[in-house]
Amino acid sequence: MSVESPVIACCPGSFDPVTLGHLDVIERAAAIFDRVVVGVGRNTTKNYMFPLEERLDLVRGAVTHLANVVVAPINALLVDFCAQQGARVIVKGLRFSSDFDYELPMAQLNEALSGIETVLLPGSRAYGAISSSMLREVASNGADITQFVTPAVAAAVRAKMEQR
Ligand code: PNS
Image 1 (cartoon, rainbow, N blue to C red):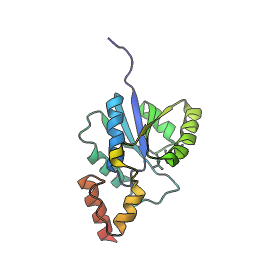
Image 2: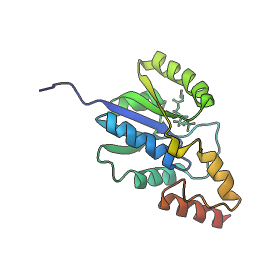
Image 3: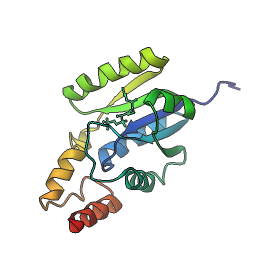
Image 4: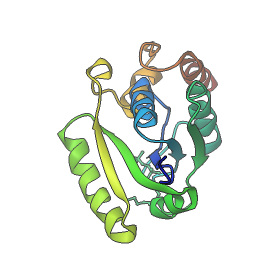
């Protein structure tokens, strides 16, 4: 019998809003690791369509089928959040080479700060290279984004557009 402690992974992001591409990475992380904490945070360089509480609710609604996944706000440095949550690994999705250029320095910084490792999962071909920012852009110009997000997220984006 193994006496090793469970390996907890953190999937961090802004999730503005969560897409099927994000969900694919979270599901695959949940199949590899014992537990997954999805950390929803603020990147101070970004303007968000959804406030943190709404982004959290949308992610929570999208992962209800995953018994070993929880969702929490990142209210600290990512490495400190991971330590609070007992996460030993950060998992991020990679869609194209510029994602790698963005992720590599962060992975190196986080490893230097705390020793935490980052695992980069290639995005599934099924979800292509879609991003939340592209979906916000096309949705704000009237496009239907239902093929890229859960029905609840599509409804939340529609409601947000109607408020404008
Ligand atoms: O990839 P994203 O969506 O821009 O990531 C957003 C988030 C909140 C996960 C990231 O900005 C973050 O981790 N913020 C917490 C502060 C921090 O640790 N910044 C340094 C990351 S190397």
